[in-house]
Every structure is written in C-alpha cells, then in structure tokens.
Image 1 (cartoon, one colour):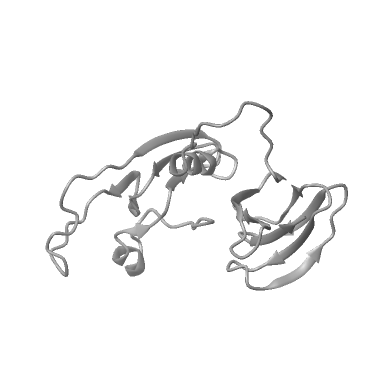
Image 2 (spheres, rainbow, N blue to C red):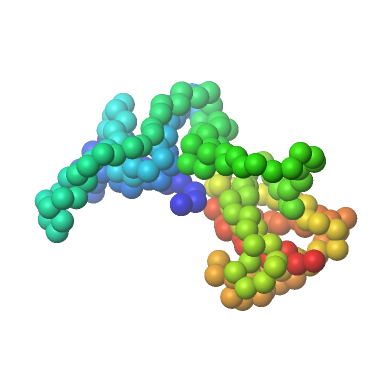
Length: 199
C-alpha cells in the first residue's frame, strides 16, 4: 500500500457511523500541526479511530466460512510512536516501513557496499529495487508518499539506459534523459513510477 487517506475521528454522519472499522496497512496516525501519535503494525489491518482513541483489531475469529479461522498461535508486532510535527513532517512513514521490512543479514565478503541506484528526494521513496522478470535489467519503483508534487533524482550506474515501464514490466515507455548518471523525475501526488535500468 502506498499513500494515505484522511478520515474523520467522529460519527457525525450516517456514513461515519457505518464505518466502524477501516483497513490501513503499516500505520494509522492522529496528528495536529505540531504533534501526533501513530500506531504502527506489521500484519494487522483493521483499525478504528474514534474521538481520541486508537484501536487495532488483532483477531476476528469468524465462525463462517471457516470455523477454525484465526485459531492457533499468532505472532505480530505493533507499537505506539509519539512524534513532533504532523504526519508529513514526522518520520512515521519511515518508521512504519522499517517495522514492516526489517534488515536482512547474510554472510558475505568485507569491502565497500554500493547500491546500484540512489534516490534523493524529500517526498519520494524507493519502494522496490529488484531484477527484472525477463532480463538482467534493474527495476526501480519510486513512490511519491507525502501527497504533493515534487522532484526526485535517481542516480544510476554510468552508461545506463533508463526507460519508464508499467508495474508488470510489460510496456516500455518513454526513455528518460540521463545526465551525469542522474535521472530527474517530476512526480504528482501519490504517483508511482516504475523504471527499467539497463546497462
């Protein structure tokens, strides 16, 4: 899930009353302009905020269609994160990503570690970096996560060709200009851009 939605914390309308729980991946946040509190989670998506109360549904245990649903041992992580500033200026989104994608360690060789790409942006994140499904190209997915227009600069290996593609990597779109191993992207609010990087 990318982006966020703003929802009311009251039940003033019949629509609000009927919405007793909403789905949200990774976090929910209740903020004022100068401070707030977020509830982060790694796998539970049923939330409710009513007045000043944050709720997270841990288990449902329905009896139909599967009478054994949610039975057994469960393991999950959630945390409360008080923060300064509102959601956009805080580090809530970054902390939620860290909780959901913990570092992976492995035995390797000592030496300089270098990423094949680097993203420089105040409002965009590099959400996916992987090998292409049908070639040796690198796929990078950049997401504008703060809800406003902005620029992102992607640094790629020298001599790379960068092409916009779709989420399935089926369509090769516009070839982007690479200047000094850098590609400048102009992103709309919550826009997802997938690029294929070939050497």
